[in-house]
Length: 264
Ligand code: GLP
Image (cartoon, rainbow, N blue to C red; front, side, top):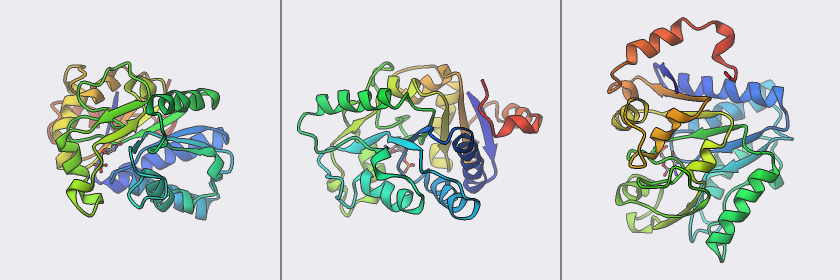
């Protein structure tokens, strides 16, 4: 995993936006994997700006979101459908038919998981996946103990995640218990990963993810096995990394061409 430490979330999000913009320009019909939560908001704002001011064209882009709350219909104010509409889709020229988010009110969640996987496969797989990280190491909503080979399916949230996400709801008890999420295996199949993590709240889990053992007890740690994964983090999120100085040194000595492009 490549670790890029930036002074601010804004600086890290700008790099992520540049990488995505380069991909969209190189491959206008690319498939993007998108995340929700507080972390990608600055990235989405920058992509919207690039669309508005730099003519970044999303008309042929397809997107797949990581997850959705079970029991929340797309039009529910706290659904991830609504989140994506309010924070990105309404600001760019993406075709609604090309945006995909698991259906949190599907009758049969097993069938919904299979259907979602088939849609990703039919689109040719995900070229680039944006990820945040839970304070407990979840990616998507793959909580601790998730099979590292899992596919899209129903999961039960931990008390910690429900507490962390309560700020998006009117009352803590309104946070759903269940979610439908891409699996760890689904995420690992994507061709490139950008993991964003900001703030001291994420310092402990980032150290475990980057420098700790690979374990289902910290599902994000499997990203060490991904061939093209980049963690873009701010200084507070880097405070518990044992080798932060080395990561900074590596980044500072990169040839310019390598910063914003897919590295294979
Ligand atoms: C949420 C999402 C994750 C996200 C994580 C971190 O519950 N399902 O995809 O990465 O938790 O959230 P935040 O960015 O708000 O810290």
